[in-house]
Length: 88
Image (cartoon, rainbow, N blue to C red; front, side):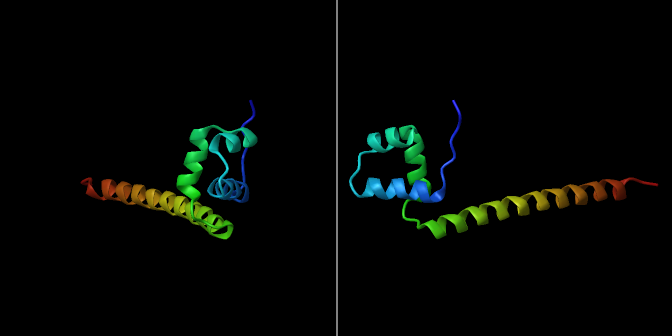
């Protein structure tokens, strides 16, 4: 079965439908997702607007890039310490 990707607009729309009174089971059947997926979405996107959700995704990707850069630099520093600590 092919995995579907839903946009922030679709996710937030589904959460707003639920807040308006739609049953979770009906929404999940309509979207083709499990209840667990819906509740994960709700915990992540509840109370957000579409533009806030897009900004959140941008910040998460930027944070990932910065973490990779930091890890690379720490490895570099550790390698330099090893080289300098050896006696010639």
